[in-house]
Length: 233
Image 1 (cartoon, rainbow, N blue to C red):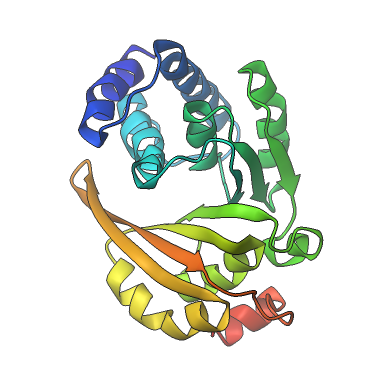
Image 2 (cartoon, one colour):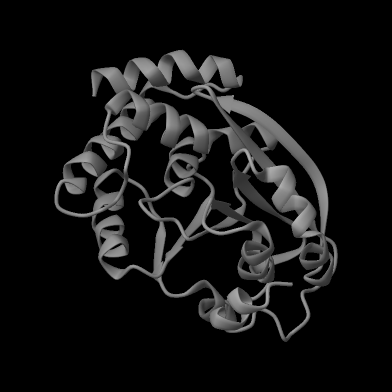
């Protein structure tokens, strides 16, 4: 926990962000719970506490450098062990967060753990292309971190975003290539690339793509996942 705390305290000023000490402690308690559970369940490949702080927490919080999520309705599509959603919720307690993933055991763990940290979060176990049926265009933001290639990810995420909102896609070194590949998908699904921000995390290149929702997503999207994968837009 000490290494996590120190890495957080060193990294936040570099991002131009400030968290109260209690928020940093909550973040580290979540990290500790994550690493403990990881011994019996596959939640993260990163097991060094300092790296958890850098590559999970600080990486997730880079989204806050693009704007205030406080009071906004946000869905984290394919959240895995809770990233980027949980760190964002700790940093922005007034954000209304839905965590979405298809792995039931993982979501059960999050649903049990987050209330013990004082976090009110909706944990939804479902496939992204199916859950949207009752949540279409209801969110200010969809966020996702390295779940699939961008052309596939846009079809899973943009249908959740209301017109005027945005999809914030967190990508690695291949962001530029994926962006070129996803041009048609973004346009067809009602989006427009607004911004691409690059930053380094512990020596690796990361990008955030801000895809603004400028018109409703046509009703036929998203398709079934087998179709999305076989014939991406």
